[in-house]
Each structure stands twice: as structure tokens, then as C-alpha cells.
Amino acid sequence: MKLIFVDIDGTLTVPGENIPPHTAVEAINKARAKGHKIFLCTGRNPDMLKPLLKYQFDGFISCGGGYVAVGEKYDEVLYDHPMTDEQRDTALKILHKNGVFCTIEAITGSWGDENLGEFLSSQGEGNSEIERWRKALSSNLGIRPMSEYDGSPIYKVVIMCLDMSQLDEAISALGNEFNFVLQEIKAPAKCINGEMINKEFNKGLGVKIICEKYNVPIKDTVGFGDSMNDLEMIQTVGYSVCMANGSEKLKEISDMVCPPVERDGLAQAFARLNLV
Image 1 (cartoon, rainbow, N blue to C red):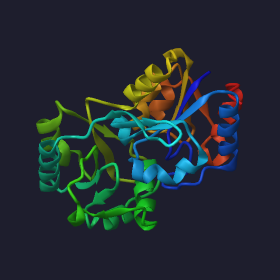
Image 2: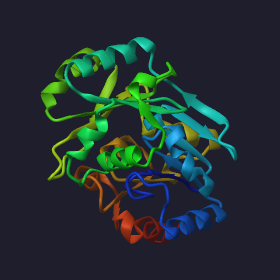
Image 3: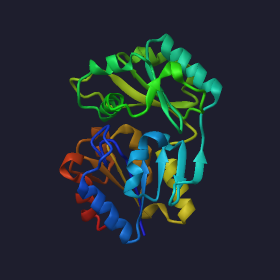
Image 4: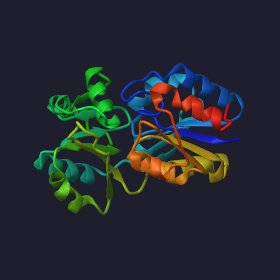
């Protein structure tokens, strides 16, 4: 039995969408029928990944590793680590002071700065995370205005700005507690886009937690990703696969590069690895 970990945006689906290619769904079903277990491994919070759960997975690593759940109804929580209220408030105060656009994510929802949509509309294409947020806002996927934030525990902060200097103060104040995971900038996009993720967790830790749950050695795990927030997963799994549409840095350290999501890359990789 293999444990298979699959990122969503840019890997399982086109960034920001919730319908995988039918070939990917077929490959997942065939792999599970052979006895393998498959888990979503995503930066999305549970609220934003819900539309994909109808395709039947064995669990998920969400919030970049901050919330891990398994089981038929995804109700067995293995890991749950939100940031403290003080960390949240300090981060938002410093980031907003420096003109950084923010989205905060809880288990049940997300809240973004009111002018985020206008900012995103000015950015070019080529970054899967920017595309995800652009589509999420245009499709009304539950991202509410920051003014409506209800105080729910927050697991991560998505950050967007135009100059690295806008992040200097936040990195200085919070860099000991949080990793600032920034995506590669692909022309014509100018946006610096990334996430503040607690150093207490990452996708790789989520992989290890699930391996312990099922008593499966790391060597019997496979991970699929495309962006730098997949780094720890790619470094942890026994065999790593990066999508051709993904980060050049991630491709360099992955065991395999498969065709892009739009060309049925996931299904082709499953077949090459004899998972189906």
C-alpha cells in the first residue's frame, strides 16, 4: 500500500478551479481500488477544499499543514494548530502598515482585504496561487471582506505586495515563528505572493503524521505538487513528482516531472508509477 499526497491548485486542478480532469478522477479511483490511500495536501483551508471532497479521498492535509483530518467523513482530526490571537493581530498590524494585501484563513472561512480584487486584476498570469485567488474572488468561493471577520482561529495569512521591502518589518518581527513562503514570480506578473506559515507545521509534517496513523514507512509515500508551498512535502515523501507547469526550483529537486495539469499529467504519472 502506498500513501499518495496530492496538491490541489496547479496539480489536481487548474488553479482556482474545483473540477479535476476526468482522467485524474479515474486514476484516483483506480489507485484506491488497488488499496492505496490518497490524501489532498493543500494550502487551502477546509472550507475552500470542500468542493473536491465529493471525489472521495482518505483525508487531507490543509492550511499548509496546520489542520490534518482523515476518515470516511474527514472527522478524525490528527493535527490542529491555529496561530495565537497575538500572532494574528501582530501580523495584520505590521503587514497592513506596510501596504501588504492580506487574506486570513480559518477552518470555516476566509477573509480578505476589501481592495484585494482590484489589486489582483492588475497582475499578469503565470502564478498558480495568484490565479487561485483571482478565481476564488470572482467565483464567490466564500472569501468575505476583512471587516466581517468573526474572530475564528486563524491558521495562516496569505500575503501579496509589489516590493520585498514591504515585508521586511514583518519578517524581522515574526521570522522566528513563521516561514514566509514566497512563490516564484513569472512574467508578466509583478506581484510578490506567498504565505505566512507557522514554523510549527508544514505539509511534510502532515505527511509524517498520516504515515504514523497508518503505520506506513515514508519510503512508501508519493507526493505531487507544483509550487513552493509544496517544498516540504516534496522533500519528505519517498517519491516526489512536480507538474511541468510548476516551479522550476521544485522541478530540480523532484524525482519526476510529469505533464501539466491541463494535459492529464496526474493520470500519466499514476500510470508510470504503477499506482493504477
